[in-house]
Image 1 (cartoon, rainbow, N blue to C red):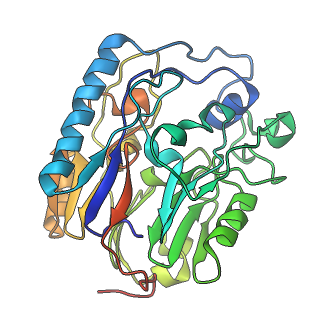
Image 2 (tube, rainbow, N blue to C red):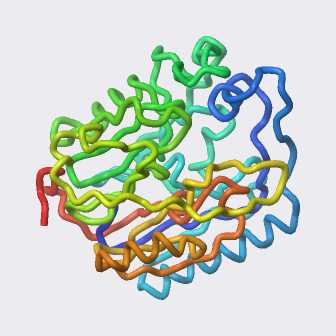
Length: 326
């Protein structure tokens, strides 16, 4: 599996049942380490109007896929616990495997059960205070998790055939990378992206658009030397400064860099948040066909086009590696 092969089957999320994460140590360390441990954090359900509008936008995103010829799967709409808005967060497809990642928050471990069957269910262990490093509170020099056991979200991973890029961050520890390498086996290489961005997932930092071409967040990837050696000969596109996106609800759940959270339908076609006209222009100048989608609550609900989808099937060449370049 890779990030750019023609999509044949995809999960598109739903906003039904969306709630803020419950207040516990894991949530404090993973999501709110930038504030005092006793500071108030959002709680409760999202407003019904936010959920309704977000579902309208997700329906429009799903239609883009069906018009493209892809089969679309939607989560079980009867599920109302946290949310299934971002299936990318905990489902990873590599080769012939569909993996439920262990996640870094206990409250999200079972979301995969409402979306698909998986080859590897890693979600049966519950984390305790010993798994989180409270030194991370108000200090980005400390990552949120210890390395006692694997703790990682699928959204920490990008795929390029037999090469996999894994972000070391609050939502992905070293033990998780080792676990993923063991699951995938010796024919795959898990490459670590380190000392780049501590807070969360990889898809507001890098997007692999097609063989030999990547979009990067220049506020985090300041040099090709931060990338795996075999990626350093790629065509690296610097994402322009994101155009401000508003949010509803109690506070924004993502930074403005969620504007680069795009997803490829094939090697030439990319879905991009419609407000990011500067990014759309850059991609079109690079020869991509851009399909804009308006996701009004991308920052409110913590997910753009890449977060809100996960491919179950793509056309791809498994033999591809980072060293290949068109």
